Length: 138
Image 1 (cartoon, rainbow, N blue to C red):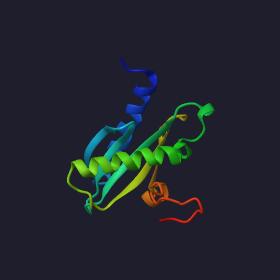
Image 2: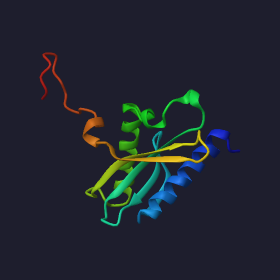
Image 3: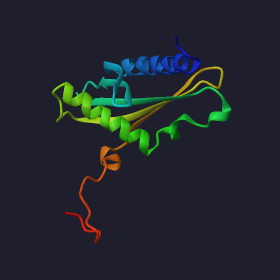
């Protein structure tokens, strides 16, 4: 059974998909899940660049702007899920970027804002180097 939140989320994603299609993108996947993360939309630009798109929406004034709700924890989940998607599609070297599409449904007509390169993987990738007790990386 769908909740109101999931119905609204799907509506926002549908608007975002239509927008990307109008821009000439090809949709590759929707709602791709892996290990607690989800890619709302995976698309491919005419140039061949793959887009991992997070869609955020706002329906009431009490929730604040959707743009600022993609925090560092969410970005890490998106990054990890994108790696899994690329690995399973034999495209680990694929040129790609992380976008956010913010949908505002508070007015008479929905407003869409597209943030290309909303975050960069190197900003969210955990530092995997081992630090010694002295604080030096090995």
